[in-house]
Image 1 (cartoon, helix red, strand yellow):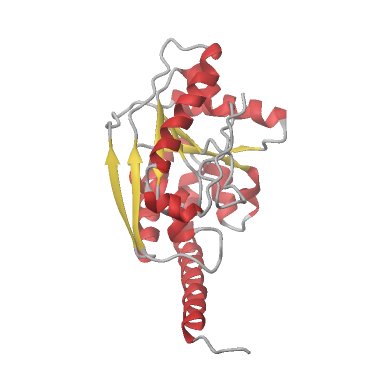
Image 2 (image 1 turned 60 degrees about the vertical axis):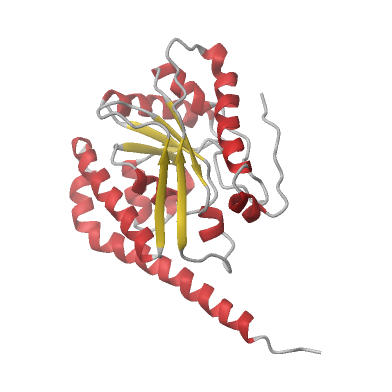
Length: 267
């Protein structure tokens, strides 16, 4: 027999409002900034200014969603030094959170599919390094583009898992090799970053999420000085283990995974 569950209905209404609130702010904020962004993004020398705008855009969007960011940094970033940021990837708000947690200008390496999003996609295409992971030529072009950014003392951010796992019970998906090749070629430190709460607060499951704290841990840097391509797998495994252990040791994160599945690292 069907029973009326008012609490379920109220939760469903909240989740619908919650998601619409995010998408409305996301679109409206970009439209408001668009005149300024059009001027800024067509001049590569103005990228630091674009990043400053993006930094505060990310902070603002998280704030209006009711998220409070808490950062635990084991090591501090130095000014005018390039890094390779490697956060785990579980949510669409990972991008905003990454922009919000540092004032060090960096460029995202991201999948080309996002360039298809109206308005946002155009800005994304002009300011990020796009990669088609199924196209070998595209992967090669990424390194050339990243090299140009690094020469300008910019940092690079890549989600080493490549994408958000379809299965939300995955604790940490396999890492892509290209991330570590880039770090070795340019002898820049790898910065593992753990995002503990994004899956819990705003996953890709529509009827889920809530305001609250977004905890971030910036781990001690993994240095690549004097490393060669022969060290690529060991660097990948070291970075993977740093993130995996921090996530496994966090009860709230493991709870958001339900029954966790930890894939083996492919060599």
